Image (cartoon, rainbow, N blue to C red; front, top):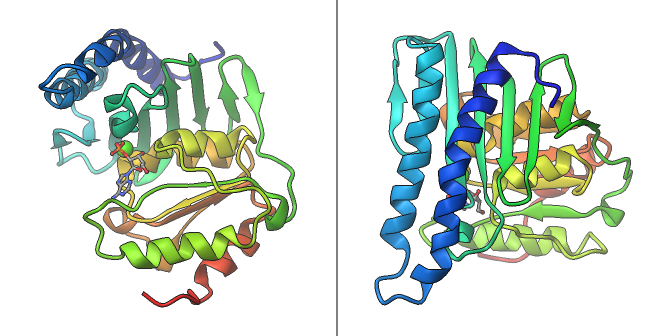
Length: 269
Ligand code: 2AM
Ligand code: CA
């Protein structure tokens, strides 16, 4: 592994340590699935355990750095300069259903700019990582976004909406609208961070999703950029807390996809 940056090193160490127990927990899920209680509580404690290991490793190295993490929320909020953004299990529903499509995602930002990102799929043993200015990698190899030029020939991914979404119909209509413009059916794999990693390494040509959280996408932002792709937030979102609606592409199909998303949905809500 060609990791020679201090921040990436910490991410890598934290992630490897956490993934050991996560893989063990994943192995238990199939048994729990057929039990009367189901795996719900077990998954939530696996989530918390993974998060705790990652946070401990980061704070051991940088005790005063800020943390934003899906389960515990914010730590060291006073530090506005250095912050780590963590999603301990991205793709929770997959994990819960014993589907091997989930990841640990860790981003690091300085002055609100994402500098480093790492996304680890512990089942496929795929480690995606990047540091600003130094390119993006999958395990030992440099990765690049795809070279597809036209939306019609592109393979796209998306996700959501949750049943609680207040804009469910608009999201479904957007899906229909975009589906009609691509030859290959759109993929919905259920892990936003791995969808972003897929754009970075050229498996997907683009990905968009509404109502995400910052921890779903923080690491993916720098990995896609360093792989030559483009990441945008819809509706002029600049404030991090409002950055929820994302479009990420190989850059060549970006305008075409963005224009289509912005075009009024034809079907009525
Ligand atoms: P999670 O597994 O950590 O909950 C599923 O489409 C993907 O989107 C997952 O990565 C899921 O993260 C993420 N996601 C986050 N917020 C979501 C939302 N409001 N609706 C749908 N998916 C969401
Ligand atoms: Ca997530």
